[in-house]
Amino acid sequence: MTGRVIVITSGKGGVGKTTTSANIGTALAKSGYKVVLIDTDLGLRNLDLLLGLENRIVYTIVDVIEERCKLKQALVKDKKNPNLQLLAAAQTRDKTAVNAEQLKDICDKLKEKNDFVLVDCPAGIEQGFQNAVAGASEAIVVTTPEMSAIRDADRIIGLLATKEEITSTKLLLNRVRPNLIKSNEMMSVDDVVEILEIPLVGIIPEDTGIITSTNKGEPIVNDENALAGKAYRNVAQRILGEEIPFLDLDEPKGFMAKIKNVFAKLKVKV
Amino acid sequence: MGLFSDIYNTVAKFFRPQEEQEGEASKSVATNRLKLVLMQDRTNLTPRILEQMRSELIDLLSRYVELDKELLELNFEQEGDQVALMLSIPVIRAKDEEEIEAAIKAHQEEISEDEECDETESEETEETESEEGETVCESEESDTDETEKISDSEKPKKSKKKNVSTPEEMKSSEGEEVCEEETEEIQG
Image (cartoon, rainbow over all chains, first blue to last red):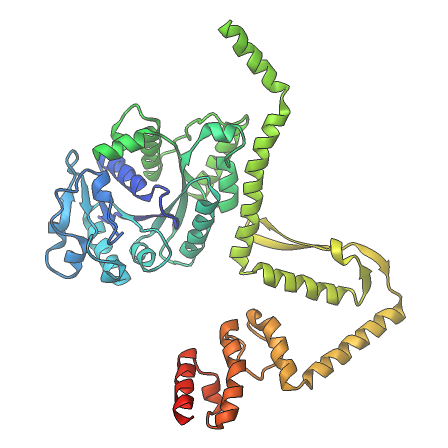
Protein backbone atom coordinates (compact mmCIF):
# COMPACT_ATOMS: atom_id res chain seq x y z
CA MET A 1 0.00 0.00 0.00
CA THR A 2 1.00 3.59 -0.44
CA GLY A 3 0.05 5.89 2.37
CA ARG A 4 -0.36 9.65 2.32
CA VAL A 5 2.47 11.83 3.61
CA ILE A 6 1.15 15.06 5.12
CA VAL A 7 3.40 17.78 6.50
CA ILE A 8 2.02 19.97 9.29
CA THR A 9 3.67 23.36 9.14
CA SER A 10 3.09 27.01 10.05
CA GLY A 11 6.09 29.28 9.72
CA LYS A 12 5.53 30.89 13.10
CA GLY A 13 6.24 28.99 16.29
CA GLY A 14 3.72 28.39 19.04
CA VAL A 15 0.58 28.26 16.91
CA GLY A 16 -0.07 24.58 17.59
CA LYS A 17 1.73 22.49 14.96
CA THR A 18 2.75 19.79 17.39
CA THR A 19 -0.61 19.72 19.16
CA THR A 20 -2.29 19.44 15.76
CA SER A 21 0.04 16.63 14.66
CA ALA A 22 -0.55 14.67 17.86
CA ASN A 23 -4.32 15.07 17.69
CA ILE A 24 -4.85 14.38 14.00
CA GLY A 25 -2.51 11.38 14.25
CA THR A 26 -4.36 10.00 17.26
CA ALA A 27 -7.76 10.60 15.66
CA LEU A 28 -6.76 8.84 12.43
CA ALA A 29 -5.35 5.90 14.40
CA LYS A 30 -8.56 5.68 16.41
CA SER A 31 -10.45 5.38 13.14
CA GLY A 32 -8.41 2.27 12.43
CA TYR A 33 -5.71 3.62 10.14
CA LYS A 34 -2.02 2.91 10.56
CA VAL A 35 -0.27 6.18 11.33
CA VAL A 36 3.34 7.23 11.87
CA LEU A 37 4.11 10.63 13.35
CA ILE A 38 7.55 12.02 12.57
CA ASP A 39 8.96 14.80 14.74
CA THR A 40 11.44 16.73 12.59
CA ASP A 41 12.13 19.46 15.13
CA LEU A 42 15.68 18.32 15.88
CA GLY A 43 17.00 19.75 19.13
CA LEU A 44 13.55 20.93 20.23
CA ARG A 45 11.48 17.79 20.27
CA ASN A 46 8.07 17.89 21.92
CA LEU A 47 5.77 15.51 20.11
CA ASP A 48 6.87 12.73 22.49
CA LEU A 49 5.67 14.83 25.45
CA LEU A 50 2.25 15.52 23.96
CA LEU A 51 1.75 11.81 23.35
CA GLY A 52 3.12 10.86 26.78
CA LEU A 53 5.85 8.74 25.18
CA GLU A 54 8.91 10.63 26.42
CA ASN A 55 10.12 7.75 28.58
CA ARG A 56 9.92 5.15 25.85
CA ILE A 57 12.23 6.67 23.30
CA VAL A 58 15.36 4.66 22.69
CA TYR A 59 16.32 5.57 19.14
CA THR A 60 15.64 8.75 17.18
CA ILE A 61 15.46 9.74 13.54
CA VAL A 62 19.15 10.63 13.56
CA ASP A 63 20.00 7.12 14.77
CA VAL A 64 18.09 5.76 11.77
CA ILE A 65 19.87 8.06 9.34
CA GLU A 66 23.29 7.35 10.80
CA GLU A 67 22.44 3.64 10.72
CA ARG A 68 22.77 2.90 14.42
CA CYS A 69 19.40 1.15 14.27
CA LYS A 70 16.77 -0.03 11.81
CA LEU A 71 13.81 2.19 10.98
CA LYS A 72 11.45 -0.29 12.61
CA GLN A 73 13.39 -0.23 15.88
CA ALA A 74 13.06 3.54 16.17
CA LEU A 75 9.26 3.54 15.89
CA VAL A 76 7.64 3.89 19.33
CA LYS A 77 4.13 2.48 19.65
CA ASP A 78 1.48 4.58 21.38
CA LYS A 79 0.35 3.42 24.82
CA LYS A 80 -3.31 3.06 23.91
CA ASN A 81 -3.36 2.56 20.20
CA PRO A 82 -0.87 0.26 18.48
CA ASN A 83 -1.93 1.77 15.13
CA LEU A 84 -0.10 4.95 16.10
CA GLN A 85 3.69 5.09 16.08
CA LEU A 86 6.15 7.89 16.73
CA LEU A 87 9.53 8.50 15.14
CA ALA A 88 11.10 10.94 17.57
CA ALA A 89 13.51 13.78 16.84
CA ALA A 90 16.99 13.77 18.33
CA GLN A 91 17.19 16.17 21.23
CA THR A 92 20.97 16.53 21.25
CA ARG A 93 21.43 17.42 17.59
CA ASP A 94 20.40 20.30 15.36
CA LYS A 95 18.73 20.63 11.95
CA THR A 96 21.97 20.07 10.07
CA ALA A 97 22.14 16.43 11.23
CA VAL A 98 19.54 15.54 8.59
CA ASN A 99 19.11 16.53 4.97
CA ALA A 100 16.02 16.67 2.76
CA GLU A 101 16.93 13.57 0.78
CA GLN A 102 17.36 11.45 3.90
CA LEU A 103 14.00 12.57 5.24
CA LYS A 104 12.30 11.90 1.93
CA ASP A 105 13.82 8.43 1.96
CA ILE A 106 12.37 7.74 5.43
CA CYS A 107 8.93 9.03 4.39
CA ASP A 108 9.01 6.83 1.28
CA LYS A 109 9.82 3.76 3.34
CA LEU A 110 7.18 4.50 5.96
CA LYS A 111 4.37 5.14 3.49
CA GLU A 112 4.78 1.64 2.10
CA LYS A 113 3.53 0.13 5.35
CA ASN A 114 1.26 2.84 6.74
CA ASP A 115 -1.88 4.69 5.73
CA PHE A 116 -0.66 8.03 6.97
CA VAL A 117 2.73 9.59 7.65
CA LEU A 118 2.33 12.92 9.44
CA VAL A 119 5.43 15.10 9.51
CA ASP A 120 5.57 17.66 12.33
CA CYS A 121 7.59 20.53 10.90
CA PRO A 122 9.75 22.90 12.97
CA ALA A 123 9.04 26.65 12.96
CA GLY A 124 10.88 28.77 10.43
CA ILE A 125 11.56 28.57 6.71
CA GLU A 126 15.11 27.26 6.78
CA GLN A 127 16.68 23.81 6.57
CA GLY A 128 14.24 22.25 9.06
CA PHE A 129 11.27 23.28 6.94
CA GLN A 130 12.92 22.12 3.71
CA ASN A 131 13.65 18.75 5.32
CA ALA A 132 10.13 18.26 6.66
CA VAL A 133 8.50 19.13 3.35
CA ALA A 134 10.78 16.94 1.23
CA GLY A 135 8.84 13.69 1.47
CA ALA A 136 5.32 15.11 1.68
CA SER A 137 2.67 15.32 -1.01
CA GLU A 138 0.12 17.22 1.08
CA ALA A 139 0.42 20.07 3.56
CA ILE A 140 -1.67 21.45 6.39
CA VAL A 141 -0.79 25.01 7.32
CA VAL A 142 -1.65 25.82 10.93
CA THR A 143 -2.29 29.42 11.88
CA THR A 144 -4.11 31.47 14.50
CA PRO A 145 -6.25 34.54 13.75
CA GLU A 146 -3.36 36.89 14.59
CA MET A 147 -1.50 39.12 12.18
CA SER A 148 1.96 37.73 12.76
CA ALA A 149 0.85 34.10 12.44
CA ILE A 150 -1.13 34.87 9.27
CA ARG A 151 1.74 36.73 7.69
CA ASP A 152 4.08 33.80 8.35
CA ALA A 153 1.47 31.36 7.10
CA ASP A 154 1.24 33.36 3.87
CA ARG A 155 4.99 33.05 3.44
CA ILE A 156 4.82 29.30 4.00
CA ILE A 157 1.93 28.94 1.55
CA GLY A 158 4.05 30.78 -1.02
CA LEU A 159 6.98 28.45 -0.42
CA LEU A 160 4.77 25.36 -0.59
CA ALA A 161 3.40 26.56 -3.93
CA THR A 162 6.91 26.30 -5.38
CA LYS A 163 7.16 22.61 -4.42
CA GLU A 164 5.91 20.45 -7.24
CA GLU A 165 5.45 17.41 -5.02
CA ILE A 166 2.91 19.18 -2.79
CA THR A 167 -0.42 18.71 -4.51
CA SER A 168 -2.72 19.97 -1.76
CA THR A 169 -2.30 22.74 0.82
CA LYS A 170 -5.04 23.29 3.38
CA LEU A 171 -5.58 25.65 6.25
CA LEU A 172 -6.19 24.79 9.88
CA LEU A 173 -7.23 27.78 11.93
CA ASN A 174 -6.29 27.21 15.54
CA ARG A 175 -7.10 28.94 18.82
CA VAL A 176 -10.22 30.64 17.51
CA ARG A 177 -12.02 32.66 20.18
CA PRO A 178 -15.67 33.05 19.20
CA ASN A 179 -16.29 35.72 21.85
CA LEU A 180 -13.59 37.98 20.45
CA ILE A 181 -14.80 37.42 16.91
CA LYS A 182 -18.32 38.23 18.03
CA SER A 183 -17.20 41.57 19.44
CA ASN A 184 -15.14 42.21 16.29
CA GLU A 185 -11.87 42.18 18.19
CA MET A 186 -10.46 39.19 16.37
CA MET A 187 -10.31 38.36 12.70
CA SER A 188 -13.05 35.94 11.76
CA VAL A 189 -12.56 32.64 9.98
CA ASP A 190 -13.81 34.25 6.78
CA ASP A 191 -11.31 37.09 7.07
CA VAL A 192 -8.41 34.67 7.38
CA VAL A 193 -9.61 32.42 4.56
CA GLU A 194 -10.12 35.44 2.32
CA ILE A 195 -6.59 36.65 2.95
CA LEU A 196 -4.78 33.33 2.65
CA GLU A 197 -6.94 31.94 -0.14
CA ILE A 198 -6.53 28.25 0.55
CA PRO A 199 -9.29 25.80 1.49
CA LEU A 200 -10.06 25.24 5.12
CA VAL A 201 -9.63 21.82 6.72
CA GLY A 202 -10.46 22.75 10.29
CA ILE A 203 -11.40 25.38 12.83
CA ILE A 204 -10.18 24.64 16.35
CA PRO A 205 -11.60 26.72 19.19
CA GLU A 206 -9.36 27.93 21.98
CA ASP A 207 -9.79 25.34 24.72
CA THR A 208 -8.19 25.29 28.17
CA GLY A 209 -8.50 21.53 27.96
CA ILE A 210 -5.47 21.59 25.64
CA ILE A 211 -3.32 22.65 28.60
CA THR A 212 -4.51 19.86 30.87
CA SER A 213 -4.27 17.29 28.09
CA THR A 214 -0.68 18.35 27.43
CA ASN A 215 0.04 18.10 31.15
CA LYS A 216 -1.19 14.52 31.13
CA GLY A 217 0.45 13.59 27.85
CA GLU A 218 -2.83 12.63 26.32
CA PRO A 219 -4.16 14.25 23.13
CA ILE A 220 -7.49 16.03 23.56
CA VAL A 221 -9.18 13.94 20.84
CA ASN A 222 -9.39 11.21 23.48
CA ASP A 223 -11.67 13.47 25.54
CA GLU A 224 -15.14 12.91 24.13
CA ASN A 225 -16.53 16.06 25.78
CA ALA A 226 -13.93 18.63 24.79
CA LEU A 227 -14.90 20.99 21.96
CA ALA A 228 -11.33 21.17 20.62
CA GLY A 229 -11.22 17.37 20.67
CA LYS A 230 -14.36 17.21 18.58
CA ALA A 231 -12.97 19.80 16.18
CA TYR A 232 -9.78 17.72 15.71
CA ARG A 233 -11.81 14.54 15.17
CA ASN A 234 -13.70 16.43 12.47
CA VAL A 235 -10.40 17.41 10.84
CA ALA A 236 -9.39 13.75 10.71
CA GLN A 237 -12.73 12.87 9.10
CA ARG A 238 -12.24 15.58 6.48
CA ILE A 239 -8.74 14.28 5.73
CA LEU A 240 -10.40 10.93 5.12
CA GLY A 241 -12.61 12.59 2.55
CA GLU A 242 -15.84 12.91 4.50
CA GLU A 243 -17.94 16.02 4.34
CA ILE A 244 -18.24 17.22 7.88
CA PRO A 245 -19.75 20.65 8.53
CA PHE A 246 -17.60 23.05 10.52
CA LEU A 247 -18.49 23.50 14.18
CA ASP A 248 -20.85 26.35 14.88
CA LEU A 249 -18.70 28.60 17.02
CA ASP A 250 -21.46 31.16 17.31
CA GLU A 251 -20.01 33.89 15.17
CA PRO A 252 -21.96 36.94 14.00
CA LYS A 253 -25.04 36.36 11.86
CA GLY A 254 -24.56 34.89 8.49
CA PHE A 255 -21.58 32.91 9.67
CA MET A 256 -22.99 29.48 8.93
CA ALA A 257 -24.08 30.63 5.52
CA LYS A 258 -20.57 31.86 4.79
CA ILE A 259 -18.96 28.71 6.11
CA LYS A 260 -21.24 26.59 3.98
CA ASN A 261 -20.06 28.69 1.11
CA VAL A 262 -16.41 28.05 2.01
CA PHE A 263 -17.20 24.38 2.38
CA ALA A 264 -18.80 24.32 -1.03
CA LYS A 265 -15.64 25.81 -2.50
CA LEU A 266 -13.60 23.15 -0.69
CA LYS A 267 -15.70 20.45 -2.26
CA VAL A 268 -15.13 21.83 -5.71
CA LYS A 269 -11.36 21.90 -5.24
CA VAL A 270 -11.18 18.35 -3.83
CA MET B 1 -35.00 40.61 38.37
CA GLY B 2 -32.29 38.51 36.75
CA LEU B 3 -34.48 37.69 33.80
CA PHE B 4 -35.52 41.31 33.55
CA SER B 5 -31.97 42.63 33.40
CA ASP B 6 -31.07 39.95 30.85
CA ILE B 7 -33.85 41.11 28.59
CA TYR B 8 -32.90 44.73 29.18
CA ASN B 9 -29.27 44.06 28.24
CA THR B 10 -30.21 42.17 25.11
CA VAL B 11 -32.53 44.93 23.99
CA ALA B 12 -30.06 47.65 24.97
CA LYS B 13 -27.37 46.02 22.82
CA PHE B 14 -29.30 46.87 19.70
CA PHE B 15 -29.20 50.53 20.61
CA ARG B 16 -25.53 50.70 21.51
CA PRO B 17 -23.66 50.78 18.23
CA GLN B 18 -20.63 52.73 19.55
CA GLU B 19 -19.26 49.83 21.55
CA GLU B 20 -19.24 47.52 18.57
CA GLN B 21 -17.72 50.12 16.31
CA GLU B 22 -14.71 50.40 18.59
CA GLY B 23 -14.20 46.66 18.47
CA GLU B 24 -14.68 46.56 14.74
CA ALA B 25 -12.00 49.19 14.36
CA SER B 26 -9.45 46.94 16.08
CA LYS B 27 -10.30 44.00 13.84
CA SER B 28 -10.45 45.93 10.61
CA VAL B 29 -7.25 47.79 11.46
CA ALA B 30 -5.57 44.40 11.77
CA THR B 31 -7.10 43.14 8.52
CA ASN B 32 -6.11 46.25 6.58
CA ARG B 33 -2.57 46.38 7.96
CA LEU B 34 -2.16 42.71 7.21
CA LYS B 35 -3.43 43.04 3.65
CA LEU B 36 -0.99 45.84 2.94
CA VAL B 37 2.00 44.06 4.42
CA LEU B 38 1.14 40.83 2.59
CA MET B 39 0.95 42.68 -0.68
CA GLN B 40 4.44 44.00 -0.07
CA ASP B 41 5.65 40.53 0.92
CA ARG B 42 4.12 38.90 -2.13
CA THR B 43 5.35 41.42 -4.66
CA ASN B 44 8.77 42.18 -3.16
CA LEU B 45 7.89 45.88 -3.27
CA THR B 46 9.27 47.56 -0.18
CA PRO B 47 7.84 50.91 0.92
CA ARG B 48 10.97 52.57 -0.48
CA ILE B 49 10.57 51.02 -3.90
CA LEU B 50 6.87 51.83 -3.89
CA GLU B 51 7.72 55.46 -3.18
CA GLN B 52 10.20 55.44 -6.05
CA MET B 53 7.62 53.92 -8.36
CA ARG B 54 5.20 56.63 -7.31
CA SER B 55 7.62 59.46 -8.01
CA GLU B 56 8.60 57.98 -11.39
CA LEU B 57 4.95 57.70 -12.32
CA ILE B 58 4.41 61.33 -11.32
CA ASP B 59 7.36 62.37 -13.50
CA LEU B 60 6.03 60.43 -16.44
CA LEU B 61 2.41 61.54 -16.20
CA SER B 62 3.09 65.18 -15.45
CA ARG B 63 4.65 65.50 -18.89
CA TYR B 64 1.18 65.06 -20.34
CA VAL B 65 -1.17 66.50 -17.73
CA GLU B 66 -0.89 68.74 -14.72
CA LEU B 67 -1.78 66.59 -11.73
CA ASP B 68 -2.23 66.91 -8.02
CA LYS B 69 0.88 65.16 -6.77
CA GLU B 70 -0.25 65.10 -3.16
CA LEU B 71 -3.50 63.28 -3.89
CA LEU B 72 -2.09 60.66 -6.25
CA GLU B 73 -2.95 57.23 -4.87
CA LEU B 74 -1.18 54.00 -5.64
CA ASN B 75 -2.78 50.81 -4.34
CA PHE B 76 -2.81 47.11 -4.92
CA GLU B 77 -5.96 45.12 -5.22
CA GLN B 78 -6.22 41.40 -5.37
CA GLU B 79 -8.92 39.37 -7.04
CA GLY B 80 -8.20 35.69 -6.89
CA ASP B 81 -4.71 35.10 -8.24
CA GLN B 82 -4.65 38.39 -10.10
CA VAL B 83 -2.97 41.38 -8.51
CA ALA B 84 -3.96 44.75 -9.95
CA LEU B 85 -2.15 48.02 -9.53
CA MET B 86 -4.70 50.76 -8.96
CA LEU B 87 -3.60 54.27 -9.75
CA SER B 88 -5.84 57.21 -8.97
CA ILE B 89 -4.68 60.53 -10.40
CA PRO B 90 -6.52 63.77 -9.78
CA VAL B 91 -5.96 65.92 -12.88
CA ILE B 92 -5.83 69.66 -12.20
CA ARG B 93 -5.58 70.87 -15.78
CA ALA B 94 -5.01 69.43 -19.21
CA LYS B 95 -1.83 70.66 -20.89
CA ASP B 96 -1.99 72.03 -24.40
CA GLU B 97 -0.05 70.50 -27.26
CA GLU B 98 2.90 72.88 -27.06
CA GLU B 99 3.39 72.28 -23.36
CA ILE B 100 3.30 68.54 -23.83
CA GLU B 101 5.78 68.61 -26.68
CA ALA B 102 8.08 70.88 -24.71
CA ALA B 103 7.95 68.52 -21.72
CA ILE B 104 8.69 65.48 -23.91
CA LYS B 105 11.55 67.29 -25.55
CA ALA B 106 12.99 68.32 -22.20
CA HIS B 107 12.75 64.75 -21.02
CA GLN B 108 14.49 63.36 -24.10
CA GLU B 109 17.28 65.85 -23.64
CA GLU B 110 17.60 64.70 -20.06
CA ILE B 111 17.95 61.11 -21.21
CA SER B 112 20.63 61.92 -23.74
CA GLU B 113 22.48 63.91 -21.09
CA ASP B 114 22.26 60.92 -18.77
CA GLU B 115 23.80 58.70 -21.40
CA GLU B 116 26.81 60.95 -21.69
CA CYS B 117 27.04 61.29 -17.94
CA ASP B 118 30.40 61.11 -16.24
CA GLU B 119 31.27 58.55 -13.60
CA THR B 120 30.22 60.47 -10.51
CA GLU B 121 26.71 60.97 -11.87
CA SER B 122 26.40 57.34 -12.85
CA GLU B 123 27.14 56.31 -9.29
CA GLU B 124 24.36 58.54 -8.05
CA THR B 125 21.77 57.01 -10.36
CA GLU B 126 22.91 53.60 -9.29
CA GLU B 127 22.30 54.47 -5.66
CA THR B 128 18.63 55.14 -6.28
CA GLU B 129 17.92 52.37 -8.73
CA SER B 130 20.09 49.54 -7.49
CA GLU B 131 17.32 47.48 -5.85
CA GLU B 132 15.40 47.10 -9.07
CA GLY B 133 18.12 44.84 -10.40
CA GLU B 134 18.72 46.31 -13.88
CA THR B 135 20.00 49.87 -13.95
CA VAL B 136 20.43 52.49 -16.62
CA CYS B 137 24.16 52.86 -16.24
CA GLU B 138 26.26 49.79 -16.73
CA SER B 139 29.59 51.05 -15.43
CA GLU B 140 29.45 48.88 -12.29
CA GLU B 141 27.62 45.82 -11.08
CA SER B 142 24.09 46.69 -9.99
CA ASP B 143 23.39 43.73 -7.70
CA THR B 144 25.62 44.89 -4.86
CA ASP B 145 23.80 46.17 -1.80
CA GLU B 146 24.31 49.54 -0.23
CA THR B 147 26.89 48.59 2.35
CA GLU B 148 29.13 47.13 -0.31
CA LYS B 149 28.64 50.17 -2.45
CA ILE B 150 29.79 52.45 0.34
CA SER B 151 32.94 50.44 0.73
CA ASP B 152 33.36 50.49 -3.05
CA SER B 153 33.28 54.24 -3.16
CA GLU B 154 35.74 54.43 -0.30
CA LYS B 155 38.21 52.03 -1.77
CA PRO B 156 39.31 53.97 -4.82
CA LYS B 157 40.65 56.73 -2.55
CA LYS B 158 42.87 54.28 -0.75
CA SER B 159 43.96 52.50 -3.88
CA LYS B 160 44.92 55.77 -5.50
CA LYS B 161 47.42 56.36 -2.74
CA LYS B 162 48.92 52.93 -3.15
CA ASN B 163 48.43 52.76 -6.89
CA VAL B 164 48.59 48.98 -6.67
CA SER B 165 45.10 47.50 -6.67
CA THR B 166 43.33 46.48 -9.89
CA PRO B 167 39.64 47.20 -10.58
CA GLU B 168 38.83 43.61 -9.59
CA GLU B 169 40.28 44.20 -6.16
CA MET B 170 38.26 47.37 -5.83
CA LYS B 171 35.04 45.41 -6.16
CA SER B 172 36.16 42.64 -3.81
CA SER B 173 34.55 41.81 -0.47
CA GLU B 174 35.00 43.77 2.72
CA GLY B 175 37.21 41.04 4.14
CA GLU B 176 39.82 41.80 1.51
CA GLU B 177 39.50 45.45 2.20
CA VAL B 178 40.77 44.77 5.71
CA CYS B 179 43.78 42.97 4.23
CA GLU B 180 44.52 45.94 2.04
CA GLU B 181 44.46 48.25 4.99
CA GLU B 182 46.89 46.03 6.83
CA THR B 183 49.37 45.99 3.98
CA GLU B 184 49.06 49.73 3.77
CA GLU B 185 50.06 50.04 7.39
CA ILE B 186 53.06 47.80 6.89
CA GLN B 187 54.15 49.81 3.91
CA GLY B 188 53.78 53.03 5.89
